[in-house]
Image (tube, rainbow over all chains, first blue to last red; front, side):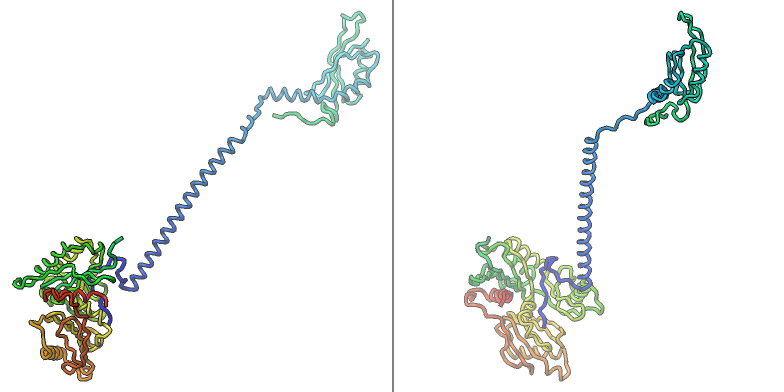
Amino acid sequence: MKPLSINFVEDPLWRRPVATRWRQILIGLGLATALAAAAVYWQWQVLDRELAETTQAVALARGEIAARTPPPPAPLLLSEPQIVAINSAIDQLNTPWPTVLDGFERVASSHIALLQIEPDHRRRLVKGVAEAKDHQQMLGYIAQLAATAPFAGAMLTRHEVNEKDPNRPLRFIFEARLDGSSALTAPDAEPSVLMK
Amino acid sequence: MSRFPGRDLLLGCTNESAVLLARGTSTPLEVLASADLDPSTHASIEALCGLVAELKSTKTVSIASRSALSVIMDDSAARSFIVTPPGGAQGLAELRATVAARFAALYGESPEEWLLAADWHAAAPFIACALPRRLYREFEDAARANGWRLVCVRPALVQVWNRVCRSIPADGWLIVGFGKTLTLVHTLGAQLASLRTVRLPEAPGVAELVELIEQERLRSPMPGAQRDRQSLLWSGSADWLPETPTMAGLASRTLPLPPLAMTFVHLSEPCQLACQLALAGSPR
């Protein structure tokens, strides 16, 4: 016969026999679930802590990068008159002076005194002031200038007799239009005209 | 660390006496306290509670705190009975309710005032025991007052059963005798059939024991083939346990507990019985 398990003193809970297999299975499942829940909770805590640390590190790195990076230059904002003035200056600087002067040199003569030349880049022409002894010489000069490169034409705009000069020369103002190949820009000049 | 390690406390209780023994591996058995009722006093649970209450003031200089206290009750002070579980019983709660109902049916008392313990089994008859809650609380109070650990409270039947369980016949009787209390457990086909505790008026002789066995056999008549297989096993500390190989036509065997040492002869007879019960709780 088997020993009797009779005792009026109740065993502590952890020493009581597990009555059935189902109870053992349930206890096992409960323990496994508790362990899994604890593991998930622990992992969640770890991930949460790592996320917080990463966020803090990213914020710190952003601050350092911002501190090291120089502030961007302020955008250059020009007004329309400024742009026009700059473009005008660039056009003047790009005037093909050697070609223009070569053209004037080719038509130069002892009967014509070229007093002044001034480019007008807007109108693609060169204004000039010269003196001649008479009208024939003046018109001949204009015609010769119109046929000489880099000019595509020449036009007399005004003429008068210079009374101040004792020889009383004929002073005239003309406009010589530049041809399309030379225009006001030198062939090897870099395009640097600012556009609005 | 305790200066007196390894000493266990054994408390034997009858309806008329209580004896507390200290037993160690390297120290001799020592009577720490003993108390018995005045012969003129009627034995009762209240009187036994009073005896146990006297143990609270036991001088325990040589006993370490947290010592284990085992209590062995005389079978007449506790109540033991057989319970057959209902068919399809599920769960300990149902078995507990069955034991409580069985107790109420057998003794006509409410089980509320009794502490019930059993060798729970859902598919076979099992032994259940009952102890007055008030007496159990006295044991707890005595242990708490002295800093002891109450580890075991059992009837003598359970203690003796566990000592001789390998020798208990599958068909027959286990008869446990202490003093004038005799408990018969009838087994049938390796299962419990009946249990009865008899309070004897005086120490029985062999003829009375034979008559008792005959009566028991009449209470549970068996076919001839099964009757031939039946046998008797006697155990306990009573000095009237028979030593004959046969009794009432049945094979008989006796496994008595070790006799009391001469150091206990100065105790009263009830206290000597309590000593025998206490020693039944000690390891062999």
